[in-house]
Amino acid sequence: MNTASAPTTDETSPSARETLKALGAYVRPHRWAVALGLLCALVGAAGGLLQPLATKALVDRLAAGETIAGILIALTALVLVGTAVEAFGAYVLERTAESVVLAARRTLVGRLLRLRIAEWERIPPGDLMSRVTSDTTLLRAVSTQAVVSAATGAVSFVAAIVMMAYLDVVLLGVTLGVVVLVGGAVVLVMPKIAQATERAQEAVGEISVALERSLGAFRTVKASGAEERETARVEAAAHRAWRHGVKSAKWESVAGSADELAVQLAFLAVLAVGGARVASGEIPVSTLIAFLLYLFYLIEPVSTLIEAGSSYQEGAAALSRIAQVERLATEPVNRRTGALPGQGAATPGPASVRFEDVSFRYRAGLPNVHTRVSFEVPGTGMTAFVGPSGAGKSTVFALIERFHEATGGRVLVDGKDVRDWSLPQLRSVIGYVEQDAPVLAGTLRENLVFAAPGATDDDIHDVLARTKLDTLVDGLPHGLDTPVGHRGSKLSGGERQRIAIARALLRKPRLLLLDEATSQLDAVNELALRDVVTEVARETTVLVVAHRLSTVTGADRIVVMDAGRVRSVGTHEELVVQDRLYAQLAATQLLAPAR
Image (tube, rainbow, N blue to C red; front, top):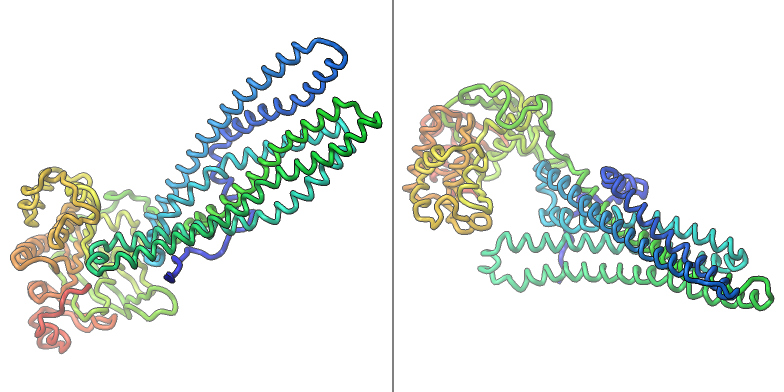
């Protein structure tokens, strides 16, 4: 089954310099812990470097008939101390690596929740989630182990080469010739590991996207008999992840076995050349033994360097995907005023709203959603927005909330351009009920106070009574502390709408935006909530996107929109006479609720 790949945030991969810079930014706060881990690793490596020399001394003493007890004790102590120090260093590095992953996840989550709506609408949530969970995990190895391993491996390698040069330069030349030959092949393999790893991580993101799509519409999937098709979609993404993972494993195994191959070939070469030199008397047998021990010692630093290179390539792939998220546009944080939510120059009383020749399109090259839209809403009262589907009614609310920025003209709240408000300050005076009235996983209480965490029990019980939710609460097994299920799955559509309205009212807003907030209510509950909205409109500015005539007739003013423009503004009685489109809509009970 063919499936489209998940959209990516940015197709440009960072350069090696940019990758190292990004890696350094993650490691820098933990540099002292990494330095301690490096020091411990070097101490352990130093112990290993001294062992061949001690062995040479031991062989020489045996040949001379001298005692070897002191050397054996020293070797034992060297091994024990080196092992203990290395174990401690490994713990420090693992702990630091977990801290790096935690910091990366905190940064990403904070950024994702501040993304501009346009970015959020462009990228599947599942793909973004995989970057927080899966990609950050790859930082664990590269952020500390790879850095320390590369440094330790390099130092150990150089030190071993120096010691081997001290023992015999000719044998060293033979060894380096073989190592360089095999090492050149490994360098060619490393980019393939990075490419395969990045493709595998992208496929993991596709798995998250496919699962989020299916689980987000679980009832629809079952009702449509689409379980097998959706399973095939997820399996296709999983198979792509497997395929690229296997490819990465293949190249890693090639790189991982290269060090052993290099040492084995070097061993054979050194054994042949060294044996000849011992036979000719150019070097003693103890020197050949010590050299061969150093040769086998090289397995560890060479292996460490290769593993560090592989980890770096994997980490570079993860850093590339994380960096793409960090380049996404986010909303400004407390721009200009620096106010915190609920603080600042909040004028008491209802807020006024004015659109002045507002134009808007989602991005360059697309047609306008709004074209020179102008209207004014004074404080208090209810203003209804009506018009055919696609007229731009909900976009009015998106521009007021600054989910999107107007591309022309001005949107003013309390006579002040919304771009001159800090976002927390602007949104703290607005209550907003979306068209699909989302309910979050958690308890009923958590949903009600989501926009007003400081609400008292009296506030909650008052709004429950006003929105006719008190009967629902009384029937729940744990009252307000009853879980509502994923996306409110344990609630009816009407109950979710009433909870969304109650949540907005608890905020005690100066401006209330209702985007077809009663479309799923029965006649009795709609009438009750209409009375609540009418009551709220006496002290708050209420804007309503309406598709029911019963909502519109009670409005103080009605804004008729069509094709992104304002056709007319007036009361129901005035518009029935003055505006033919409105008269047609009214004659057909306006429109069925938009979806």
